[in-house]
Length: 356
Image (cartoon, rainbow, N blue to C red; front, side, top):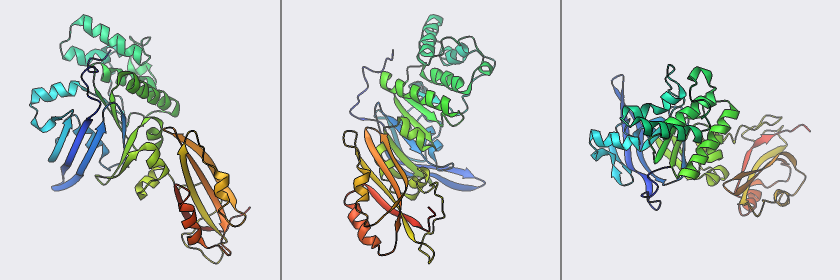
């Protein structure tokens, strides 16, 4: 179905960014929106960019197809430097890069078919070719029975699938997704994410998506970078970032600190606190599940269990324990050192007086 598959070199980064800087003029002042970004996005992978609102992720995404001009640095799409392209060459490049938007950007007065066909009509494709291609992509996204429907007759998830079909109509080799599921309910989100993963696997399209939701990253991404204040602060394979986040912003995005505990945590022990609250993560491959029971044997006395779960991410199992341990006679630093030799991550979240 796609025409680029025969000439894409999967051994080199599809997108290579070096020393990217972007400034905006805001009320007479210069705002440094993107700072010294270095990034390699692998060919044929699903690559996630996550950060809070205002972190710079949308600005970064829009530089990849030239919608935002950079002030310094280089962006190479398959070794083609965007800064050296003429206006005509940039238009050609954009036809190789599809884009999906948060709010769909559909034309309300046009049918599903007409919305999807529009990029080809503008590019003066023959009518027969347009009809064939539009029917192909609508079948791919599961909307071949909605051809003559208008956007007002569709659900949010269906509208986004129209947006995906439109983004695919030019046979792109890269798909940019700007908060593609943020406006959707959980069921529609699941459908759209499954569709994007299917597109990636079947067509070999490189997908770059931005989001503020770690669950989206968990579901379909191969690699992820965390952006904060216009800078990349953490990067890696998704399972690694989930199991051992290094930065506070990453932990916050993962909601690691927002536990549903039946008591209040204090950062330092008080006279009323009787227990230290430990959070422990252990990672293994899918064939060797983490033995959470064995981890508990490192604790010298009775503990109270508040969370025990095992998640599967990229064929890795990540086990998590949250326990309350009596502080009387407990040598916390010594215990932490022992545990660090056997688990992926361990920390004392705080101190409390649990009620049982």
